[in-house]
Amino acid sequence: MLTAPAKPHRAEIEHAVRRLLYQRLGRPTPRAAQAPRPLLVNVSARHCHLTPEAVETLFGKGHELTPMKALYQEGQYAAKESVTLIGPRSRVISNLRILGPCRDLNQVELAYTDAISLGFDIPVRASGDIAGTPGCMLMGPAGFLELPEGVIRAAPHVHMHPTDAEFYGFKPGSFARLKIDGPVGMTFDRILVRVSPDFKLEVHIDTDEGNACGLGPDTPCQLLP
Amino acid sequence: MLTAPAKPHRAEIEHAVRRLLYQRLGRPTPRAAQAPRPLLVNVSARHCHLTPEAVETLFGKGHELTPMKALYQEGQYAAKESVTLIGPRSRVISNLRILGPCRDLNQVELAYTDAISLGFDIPVRASGDIAGTPGCMLMGPAGFLELPEGVIRAAPHVHMHPTDAEFYGFKPGSFARLKIDGPVGMTFDRILVRVSPDFKLEVHIDTDEGNACGLGPDTPCQLLP
Image (cartoon, rainbow over all chains, first blue to last red; front, top):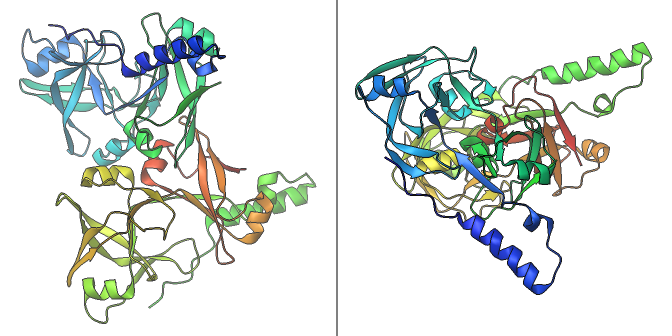
């Protein structure tokens, strides 16, 4: 089962229109409009990534994730399926969304606010770097799954294509700054740069970070060295 | 009733010791140690300020707030009393702490995460600037109090004595920057500067902001122009 191919994001269309307009008007194109892609900053709510085996344990033999909503990164989606997370003090978060497709490791990404309400002390980690992190129990309609590790606060990060990395002058694994304007304007000083030919330019911050800077759909954002 | 006079804060003692050490060693004192006071950054959890009349409505005729814990600012305290806040969709927050002493206006300060869970859309405002903000219902053991306005997200701000303002070069009402180090290091670009001879140097950020930057007791913080 697949989701319909994602339509071009509104920001992509605006970006293309902006470039054409400057061209037509014979005006110098501002640097932001020269960028290979528009800068999207999206808030990732808590979620998990699962292996095919974990999905079967939680949802039953032979079960596969059902795509519900395509995400901006090519091929990624929010699944219809969600799980219940049981924390160290038997406190729970229900409806923890699963993001697909399946991966080769199980990982739960929470904001600090979530972690505090559950009674977890979780580290900030790059996605996939889960050695020595706390575990938890997941509950699905067909069973329980104990994760010995994998609960993290994802380091705020930016996905980018090599052409974006070249334009902005970032190396994979380095840190970019992200300036957010508005009444509670702030600059994230450590946005982890992740580069892949499969990536489109997109910053992911969590709900705490999004709420702290009051990020809205029209908030001006700038990626800086 | 009064709380015991607050002992010098650990940061104040460290600040004094640091200065003496540099003096004794005959070494040049770093700028942070030259500051009139140490820089304290504290997280303000959601709370409210009430008028004496509001306290009587909620807790009964003649009732006065009982200090429970002295705050860093001289004379300010967390009261033993708390109220229940009822939001626009009948969702509630119980145990909303009252900060004393009483003021001449009623004001509720929430983080965005609180506001979202209650179903509020609240603006970022300086304390006291509540015209046109949403209201709410408060419930105490002796009665209800309807606030026509006063629910805000407090703008992140710094209290300072005029000698601090002079040292750092800040004018009242201007904005300072606050650089927080650590794995999710960030720089708050709009910390409202509040100056009074009654103030000790202290930054107040809310729980979203504190969680977003992962502020801990040993996190290095720097106030910048």
